[in-house]
Image (cartoon, rainbow, N blue to C red):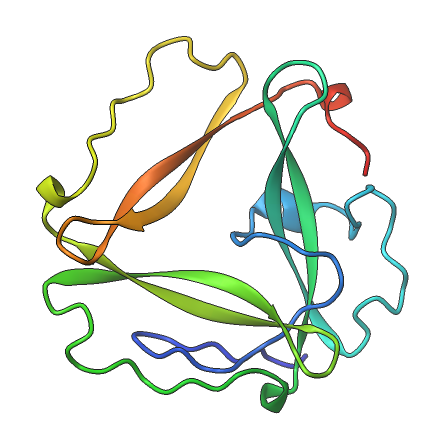
Length: 179
């Protein structure tokens, strides 16, 4: 089994790449355990990622009739050719001196037709007063499943704020489109 390259710490490097179906980051164990399928739920062709590494992510789309969202799995075929991805050097030592670094993954097209999975650093302020105030969700706001993931916005001190992005996910699979 070939290993994908990952960059740790404050380095933004080249690494694995992915194919075909676009996606947003974060891999859930339920999606990984699911059979290999594309957006429509149909099985992926056997040669979909024959010379790459297959990973899963997800995105959210509006449900059809219950004013909630559906989680749509996304397949990525990550390239094993490090030279097919953009190369970045380490971040300067002074990067985010007055905050802390949070890393998210992004997928970019590689030069060999697959995708590159690259870390995207965010310099998050330690000063909560520099960020917008966010109220907690009120009880009963969602009769589905509430999911949260980080969302980054500019802070008043020139860094970023990590705010929750909430999704009310439907419990009704028939309300989700079969794309």
